[in-house]
Image (cartoon, rainbow over all chains, first blue to last red):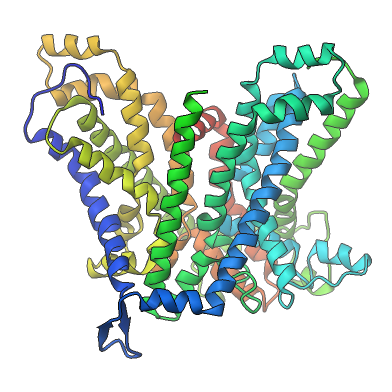
Length: 294
Length: 282
């Protein structure tokens, strides 16, 4: 890794400059993470008086636990649903905004601001709109003959949290799709138009393939978002219910460890999540290296 | 635009208007709800036009809050959120600038090791190590304090990378000239590097302020004293109470106030925001 050609001399100064960042990293990141690794190999008795070393038993138990397997399935559905909903809407909007000339920046502004809204607040907003007794959407659905109730129906609850999480993420995806669209050479599209390709055909045969680096990047970012940043959406609305239907992995770590006080199991779940984050980060960085070479 | 097709233009505008409406709808509903009187929610559906209780609701929430739900006044929570967001933002910027400066402008043993140590924080979000991090903060006696709310969150790999990248583009001649003139490292940092980085700092400031303001899990874990509640997590306490009681007009007033500061930041600093977002994420 490079430095400048010419550098400052100094034996202690660089360490002093790095110290604040490194100390905080060690105390609040590295140490807790290693504690999680260590605790995942222990089991505490019910009163927290005795801990015994149990090796990988916590992990074995987790993978045999129907609740944990259910949580994995729920997380998969939730992240795929959020990612697909948010990215497809964002792509449609970005492509349409990209056609505009004069109104482009006003539309962008109007679409971008939900980025500022916290996931928990997004959850509360949609929780209110879908409130079974006073919400607007259940009222409309009722006229169509559907009784919406996310307090009893797991499917309704899942749909609610997906909508809330995807809504907040649209703005982010629109911004990156717009940036990607602007890097596609206009001459290619014009050439296709001269050859008589319809707008739809131009989109599927030229724009969409050339956009694939952006799409892939957003895919990873959105999955990471749905898996790790949506704790607030779940906690502020369904709390993982009804009957585990929206209990995603991140929420389960919190519920089992902080509410249920099952430290060994919660630590083992943390370790699994860390492995997932590391895998996703590696995928993301490898891909970015490749994109530079395009 | 390749060819002129009036109908498809109209259609495009319709799609965008529908999209904007979808994006605005939840917030519109929240604003409307926050202007209603208390009886409005007993009658079934929510009206779609504003009521006349806006000032009462907002004043009530700012000054007293929902004390029955155990939530302090929103005014206090907004203040707490502001302090936490500012502390996180300034902390992140300060320590990242310093470490990027060390990594780019010095040669010293274990330089690459430290770089990777900082990099690892990217892979360890709070959400995956909840309990042990809580234990550390509890052992340090930092529960229910602004230090506990902000310090554990101020390590930043992304900001360090961004500044490193930027410092690498600063011309070598500046350093040579500064050294010829006898400037030491700290003087060079303060008088040359910082002024050059000001746009990058501003762009990151916008992103990190929003990040700090929207923290949810962390304040939830480490504050039990309502005096330290931040507004984003405080709202959750109110909704659990509101689900039993129809107090939605007050909760929505709080929601609007909690969402307003970061939204204003984006609207007024959109250019910096876009720059910060696209640069930190790659």
